Length: 329
Ligand code: GFB
Image 1 (cartoon, rainbow, N blue to C red):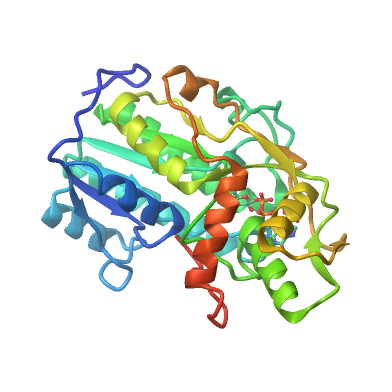
Image 2 (spheres, rainbow, N blue to C red):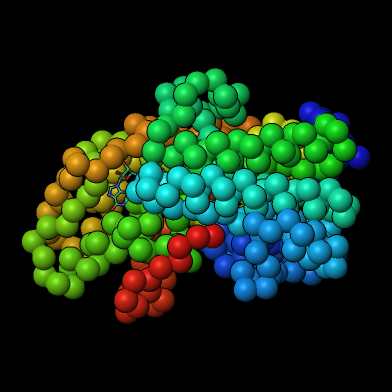
């Protein structure tokens, strides 16, 4: 049993039955890779087996499979365009997944649950770098408020089940993620895989330029998903508190800077054309990771190394497919 706002002693993961909900997504697949190095029994359920938006199905599955640890890595995710154009999917799917998994975890005695949030939960004009205390202190960024509201509800569910039922549930807020298993579909993806695909296609087609949405001035922080997975295992062991905790790389780059770095990795020498008819979104989003660093965890994969290995993964797994979509985690 835990107090609502008090950290407890280290949690022992050894020999536990660990369910990674959303194991085919960017985060879930990284968690499987990371957890394969631990002495745990991994549980997964594909979308064809279990629809996490259906409460009874989720309760039946948790009752039967008896996970002791749960990672809620399942979510409807996407880039700025997908968030803006499919608000109902983003709020409904995420609310249902979180509520169903968290409630079932409570009912069937899950020992530890880790909910994945996002730094877009913070106000559009939050102080930078953004401390966890900025939550609910101002209006959200309009392009992703539906997703953000659902993720804030998830944080509140975690807090409520801690306070009322003493559950050892926590929530982590990752910054913008990338890596193997990402979604490279130009309509629904985040910026990093989108620009990688655009640079790759432009090089292959001999195009003189590639398009970059917005003005190129927004600043973003990127974290390799293998670093995130490592941080999540660390937090499972060492963190028990109702307050959210940020997970980031601590380094930010402009969208123009990112586009240039991607051109270098891909070997594309054409121009960048900035399409100001597309939204910039929030001007800056750098997470304050001093709380996590203060506990002794540090990111290891720099952006240059991460872009190179992600491009290798793209070449091996996606480049020759028609669309390369992995639409939701
Ligand atoms: O990654 P992204 O789609 O989402 O866009 P957010 C980041 C920035 O890159 C925006 C620009 O300024 C985009 O206009 N950008 C430039 C592009 N070219 C492209 C392109 O080809 N594709 C895309 N997608 N962007 C998301 C939220 O916000 O962050 C999600 O919508 C989530 O809910 C995620 O929280 C982490 O960083 O703006």
